[in-house]
Image 1 (cartoon, helix red, strand yellow):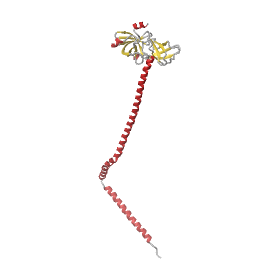
Image 2 (cartoon, helix red, strand yellow):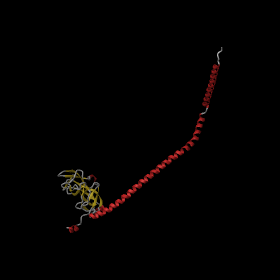
Image 3 (cartoon, helix red, strand yellow):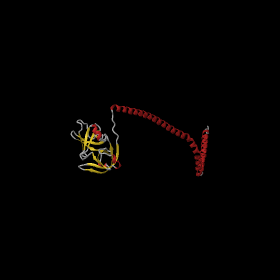
Image 4 (tube, helix red, strand yellow):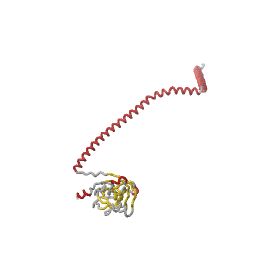
Length: 287
């Protein structure tokens, strides 16, 4: 009996067909490789540029909505910020109006209280500037010589002389356009002062050094180191509350202080015209 060879014939046929397609595919791939190798690079570059030239406007047009949205968002944010800032300023303005009305009410109330308490304001002061032209600083005297210029006619003995730190002395003698100043460190200087913190009174006495003594303080005075002493205005010769000295030692028996000014800073000074004492004729009538 003969064998059937149909299956083998079919298999061989399929293999031949696949081999034919495989060879044809390899031929097509080789042909494409040859064509790609032969294509001019400039043509590819031109095609690429053309594609970019066409696509760039399209991409720009496509991005316009996004840019518009971004710009609109920024503008809305700016408008919201301006609105919030405007609301804040309105609220602040309303508060300032309330404070203004309250201040006026307090001023009116203060005037009423002054009348009830018979309050007397401190007389207004006028100040003049002068230049230091000489200094006398030794064991016997601490003084300055000032050039007054055109202000000489308005300066009197006893006026306070100050700089940026505070009181430095008082006018002693006026002659022509010049004046001599007795410094607060001079042995003849006696300044009525008061503690800026506790308001305890005393007399600050100089001794021709930078170490001054506070005499006649109250028995139970609360005076401490580094407390600032200011003019009390007692006696009417000096305006009140001018800084004078700082306490360096506050012992039981001795209280010492140092002036606030430095001698090297005494170039331009200010003279305070303060007239609160009555003239001689009025003083005799008051006696």
